Amino acid sequence: MTIKKVLATHKDQRVPVKIWTDDIDYNTQAQLSRVANLPFVYKHVAAMPDVHLGKGATVGSVIATDKAIIPAAVGVDIGCGMNAVRLSLKAKDLPDNLKAIRSRIESVVPLGAGGKHRDPKIAGGHDISMRLSTIFEKHPQISKRIKYDAFAKQLGTLGSGNHFIELCLDENQDVWIMLHSGSRGIGNKIGMHFIEIAKREMEKWMIHLPDKDLAYLSEGSEYYDDYIEAVSWGQDYAALNRTHMMNAVMMELRKHLPAFAVTQEAINCHHNYVEKENHFGKNVWVTRKGAIRARKDDLGIIPGSMGDKSFIVRGKGESESFCSCSHGAGRRLSRTAAAKTYSVSDLVSATEGIECRKDKGVIDEIPMAYKPIDDVMDNQTDLVDVVHTLRQIVNVKG
Image 1 (cartoon, rainbow, N blue to C red):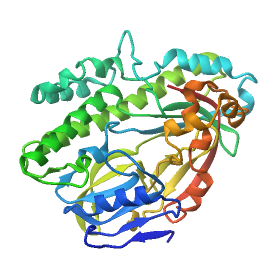
Image 2 (image 1 turned 120 degrees about the horizontal axis):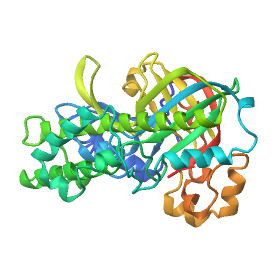
Image 3 (image 1 turned 45 degrees about the vertical axis):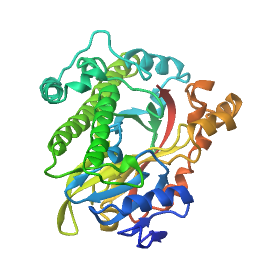
């Protein structure tokens, strides 16, 4: 067991918090303690080794709840997660200069917060379309935040921030494609809508919370089922978005690289989501905010920063973590602090040998803004086994 710290119960904390790292500051611990005091939190709160302060709830936390869900704990990037496939290509099959490869990927996947397709194709998206239509009919206020057709225009687009597409090599010099994205603008606006509803519900019932972002929807309440429907849609849309991007990248690479096959089928895992699961003999909602499911033999993806290693892992099914593990390295510095602390020359040095953007627009993603991924992995040997270690050679940022 690698639980490094336990926040014991006290008058302002109903259940314990079990933490898989010593690298955690006071404010993050206080935020975890506030979550652990909610009346419907089940057993304990688990904090993964990449844990850090977040909005709504702590990034890197796993929150099991009985008959209630906290929309802000799931967050606004509903279903954000990872997708990776291994190809039959070897390092020797790639060109020495990878700039053209990066440019080709950037040409077929729209990037940035407003990235969208001019001629959207929603292959595989009919069910997604019909389900979203039902959500908009029940909640027409969402249309004031974003147009219905945004889901089609942004299907197969990357977004911004820490979202990325990478070409990587593993320990056998096999080539992998790995990408990170979520439910884009439509998921964001749906999340915001229900976070506001939850806050209004707290006001309506005069429920006073230490943090308004901990507003929740209880089973049987007016909007509970609607949120379950909407968040499930967002999670499915996010997975489909990643699949569309992966297909677009592979199709483009086939035009410019030797013929290849997929030798490891896609691993497509969320790390911002909620799902009904059974733990300690009870069916409960499990919200993973910056954590992935790691049941026994589950395959998952734990990326490092844009200049560090990433890992394909196999879960061990550790019950104390609610069968979960970290989702990445975890931020050490906020985006603002990183941009103030480091320069473009620092970024160039930190990403030497990687074909990627090296400009002030991505300084907030500099590797030093994140915790060392090796430390994170050392703190969760009871949660996962490493199957493959990847190092990126091309990185595309939003």
